Image (cartoon, rainbow over all chains, first blue to last red; front, side, top):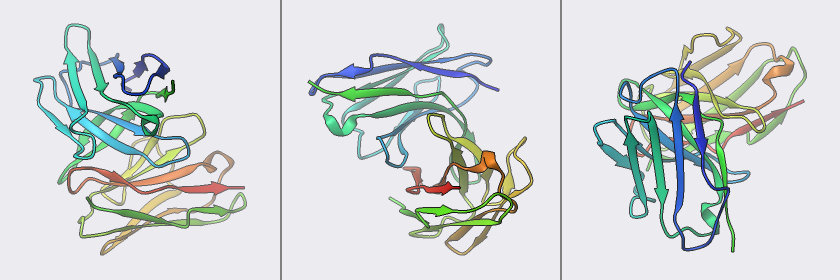
Length: 120
Length: 106
């Protein structure tokens, strides 16, 4: 088990920056790759991006221009920033641990999720 | 991006019955497919990976198979705790993409 817990403001104003953190307990943030995934209400899951503790990142091209991922190894914590948000960014945001498959990665542990609503 | 299309979008079944859910990839993804179960208000839970490999701790009534770009999740005997939404995910090519989900209802 690798408990993950997201936290951050539940409300963000349009055009501002959404900021979330994910605390990794029961393991080290240095041990794996980590992703952020979101789920708009009633919609499917969307992969946002991933990060390794060295700072190596990969982003979904659909969000790349607005997303910044970072990792704080001293706090065993991940961070997500999404700039210039609009109502379409309203979603539950998850952090997840990645596991390597033959070609890419899937997600074996997930946080409980953090609902972020973009509203003025 | 690789598109993942699930069918049906929802289904109703009774406890004890067999259920099958299909996921079709828009291009070849080998067997780089995972299945997740999500109950309301909860995070997704990994069920299978590699199209047919059962995750540790997942009941054996869950199984997966692949035929070309078509993938199937089967639940051999539906239990009350299996009523949930199921998602497939391809991990053949970045960006990793998910199906739209299949809701299994009583």
